[in-house]
Structures are given as C-alpha cells and as structure tokens.
Amino acid sequence: MSDLEEILINKKVCKSVWFMRQAGRYLPEFREIRSQNKDFIQLCLNSDLSSEITLQPIKRFNLDSAIIFSDILMVPYALGQKVEFIKDHGPKLEEFKIENFLNNNKNKFSQKLQPVYKAIKNTREKLEKEKSLIAFIGAPWTLLIYMLGSKIGKNQVDYEILKKKEFEVNLILDNLHDYLCLHIENQIAAGANVVQIFDSWAGLITPENLQDYCYIPNLKLVDFCKNKKIPVICFPKGISENYKEFNNLVKPNGLNLDYDINPIWAKENLKNVVLQGGLSPNALLSSEKEIFKRAEKYLDTFKKSPYVFNLGHGLLPETDPVKVEKLIKFYREY
Ligand code: CP3
Image 1 (cartoon, protein in one colour):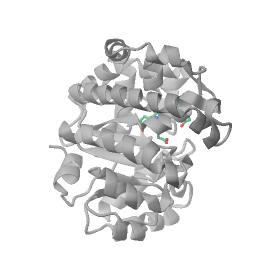
Image 2 (image 1 turned 180 degrees about the horizontal axis):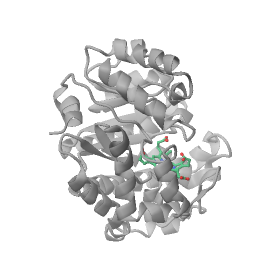
Image 3 (image 1 turned 180 degrees about the vertical axis):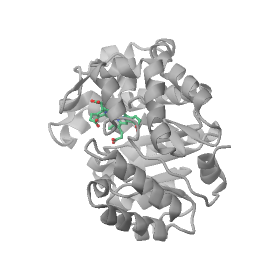
C-alpha cells in the first residue's frame, strides 16, 4: 500500500506531500512539450506525453504522489462537447445541446478516453510502489458550470434560469454521475490508487442549494468509491464553514482545505477525516521566509494528526520551481 493510502485508509500519521497542478504550467519542461502541442485535448490524449508530464514533477522534486496529467474537461469532451483552450483565456466549450448529450453510451465514452487509461497504466508501471498515482474527476456541478456556460448566467449563476431548467439540470447531473463512476472505474482498473473529486465551483452555490448541487452529488460519488474500496479525497472549494456540513454528510476519506479555511477552525470542526492542503498557492509567490512562515501555520496545527501536505488550490503558472523545491525540503525537515 502506498503512504497516501496508509494515511487515508488507516489514518497513519506520517509525512506525505503532493501539490495540485504539480504537473504543468509552471514547469519549463512542461512548457517545452506544450509549445510543440498546441491542442491541449490532443496532448491529454497522447499517452506517452501525458505519462511523461505526470512524472516530470516526481523526477524534479521526488514528490510522494503523482496526479495523472489530464483534465476534468476530458469528460465533457468524451461526451461529445467540443472543448478548446484559448491562450490566456481558459477553456471554451461548444454550445451545449441536450440531444447530443443524451446520445452517448458507455462504450463510446470509454473508447474515447482509452489513451488516458493507457497513460495511467504506463505511469503506474514506472512509479515506485510507495508512491500513489492519483486519478481525478470534476464534480457534476463544476462540470455543469463549464458545460452550460453562459446558459446559466454570464459571470455568476443565475438561479432563476437554473430553476426554470431544473428538470434538464437534474437530468444532466444524474447522467454525469453515471459517466463519472465509469471514468473512476476505468482509471482504477488502469492502476490509479486514489481518487480526488474537484468541486472547484462549489463556492458559486447558494447555501440553500448546497445539498442538491454539492453534498448529494459528492456523496453519491464517494459512496461509489467506498464500495469499490478506493480512497477518495473531496475538494469543495469556496464553501467556507459549510465544509463542516459537507464533511458530516459526505464523509470522504480525505478533505482538501481551500486557502480560505482557517486551519485551527478545521482542526476543531472537521472530524473523522484526513485533512489535506490549505496553504495558499499565492504564498509561493512571496519570499522564502514568508513561505515557510505560512506553511508552518498548517504544519504546527496538524502535526499530531494524519495530514497530507498540499495547497489550497493549484500551483500558479508564475510559481518559481526553485521555491517549490525549497518548500518541499522545509516540509520534510520540519
Ligand atoms: O494537477 C495536475 O498537475 C494534473 C493535471 C490537471 C490539469 N487540470 C491540467 C491542466 C488537473 C488535476 C486539472 C484539474 C482541473 N482542470 C480543474 C480542477 C482544479 C482547479 O484548478 O480548480 C479545473 C477547474 C480544470 C479546468 C481547466 N483546465 C481550466 C480552467 C484550464 C485553463 C486555465 C488553467 O487552469 O490552466 C485548464 C487547462 C489546464 N489543465 C492546463 C493544465 C496543465 C493548462 C494548459 C495550458 O498549458 O494552457
């Protein structure tokens, strides 16, 4: 069993570090490959290169876990919605059409994502056995935000539109659940050891809607993982003190703190769960002294508990890899 699994399943208190978005953007060796591969989706579908990119941060920093180089938007892509990444602008999805969405089947979906599974298999073979290979998915709500785009509001979610479309929205969320389970199952079959569920846009949900759009969809996925005996980490970013209610209802093995959550509050309120991360990725843009000081706050708070060192969101593109290396060293010597 890898150390991350030992921590998540057996609540072992030991050191373990990995970073969200550790593979990509801020690494010159990634940018080199990226500059020759203009189509991001095709890059994710290149098994050899995805495996190589997954291992880049492991080679450079000897991190304890690898996260497969892919994207949460590979799921809408595999469900037939065109996905493009516009430079300095982020993802752009083709207009959502319910008739296309409903015209999918499990075989077609798995077939389209076969290269991702092959990359997982290749990577698992190359990775030392104490290291976990982390698979991931976007939570249904977060995928819905990208898939419906301006159909549910321009810069924020328009709940009037959402209510009017309630039947369609629920149909999409239910269907997504089934495909996400299949994607989890396929990634595990290929050799991944742990699953992380990114609900990056959970913070857009109003408190009275959290149950329907965040807790229940996450709970269903967590239960699926638990039935398969796969440790699962949730990341309901931006829901502030509702992290407590989330944890009590969803009961994942691990919970990634976002940078707004006070670690002392977390320690007091988030029970029976392994906490991960929390440190703001912005901290890495400051001086070494400041980085260590801010990291220490998390390490001091969680020193007697099973805790996975990570961040409160992904590493930023402008992060200096040298500082990442120094932070890892600081953590290991702490
Ligand atoms: O963590 C890793 O290193 C593994 C790979 C990974 C990527 N995306 C690669 C990627 C993971 C785990 C993700 C998750 C992801 N993708 C999330 C959830 C985490 C979060 O950040 O909240 C979300 C919301 C997405 C959607 C997405 N993909 C966006 C908004 C963008 C564009 C802006 C950005 O974040 O870079 C992407 C593109 C993307 N995904 C890149 C990488 C390395 C950058 C691609 C490029 O070089 O242009």
